[in-house]
Length: 139
Length: 280
Image (cartoon, rainbow over all chains, first blue to last red; front, side, top):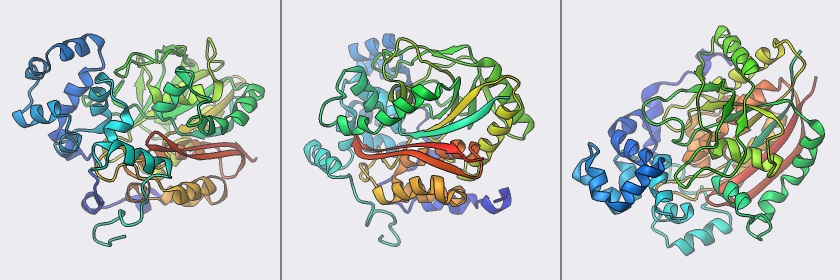
C-alpha cells in the first residue's frame, strides 16, 4: 500500500465524523474552539493549582480567558456540553480526578443513564455498536 | 546486532493501574482482567529483553494543547511517573536507553519519518500500566524503556498504514544499531471504548477479536482500516489501536501468536492482549 493509495480527501474524511450518533470527534476545529477549556483543565495536573481551584473555583476560572458559558458548564460538570464546546475528555479528566470522582461514574453522566444502569451495561459486555454506527444508514 | 525479538499488544486502562496499586487484583472484578497476563509475566521473566520500545499515547499529561507531536520518541536517561491529577502512581522511575533511542530517531528521520525528539517527559498510565501488567510491582523495572508517544487524541492521528511503515523503519533502525541487544516492541491502548457523549460505553467484541486475529493471520489488511471504521465500530477511543500497528509493522511479514487474552470490561474499556514473535 503506497501513500497515494491510503490518502483520503480531507473534506470527506471530516464530514463522515458527523454521521456517528452520540459522538463528537476532537477535530482541529474543536481543538481551536476548546483551547482554553482544555488548557484550564490541564492546569489541574499541578497540586498547587488543584489546591487553589478547590479553595475558590470561580476565582480560579477568572484567571483564564473563558466565556461565561464555558465557566457555567465547567462549574456544572456538564461534560457533554463541554465536549460540544471543544473540550476533550482526557483534559476534562483532570477535573474529574481533582473532584475525586470515579471516572466510570463521570463518563456515565454523559449517557443519560444512571450510574447503576451504565455499570450494569458495562458488566454485561458494554453498549452494542448495532444501530449506533451511522445516522444516515441507521446501522 | 540489536534485534527485535517479540511484540506485545496490550490495553493500558488507568483503572487497571489503580487496581494493582491498591492491591485489588484478587477482587472478582479484576481477577479475570489480570489472569490473562499470568502467562506473559512468566514468559517475559524467561525472555529477559534488554529494551522495550513502548508505543503509547500521552493523555494530556506531558503534552497539553500547546504542542501536539504526531510521533515523539523519548531519548532521556529516565522518565518519571506523571501526576495525572491524583498524584503519581507508586511505580519505579522508568529508565531510558538514550543510545538506542537517539539512534532510532536519527535512523527514522533519514528514513523519512520526521520524529519529534523528547528529552524531558513524565510518563502517564499509557506507559506505566503496561509495565505493571507485564512486570508486576518490582522495586525497579527490569528493562530499559524507550517511550514512543503517538498523537491519537487530536484528529487526524496518523493512518494505520503510516503507523505500520513507522514500525518497519524502527525495525531497520534497531537492526542497524551496533551492540547485541534483545529489543521488544509493545503497542498499547484500545481495545474498543468510547469515553464521551451519549454513545459512551461502546464495546465491540466481535470487531476487536477480528483485529486480534488479523494481527497474526491477515495482517496486511490491518493497514487499510480507515479512522472512520475504528470510530464507528470501536468508539472514539478505539482509535488507539493504530498504535498496535507500529508494533506489528516492526515484527516483519510473518508472526506467530504465543499468547492472547480478551476481557470485557475494565472500567469503560475492552481489554486485549497479545504476545507475538517474528517468524524468520
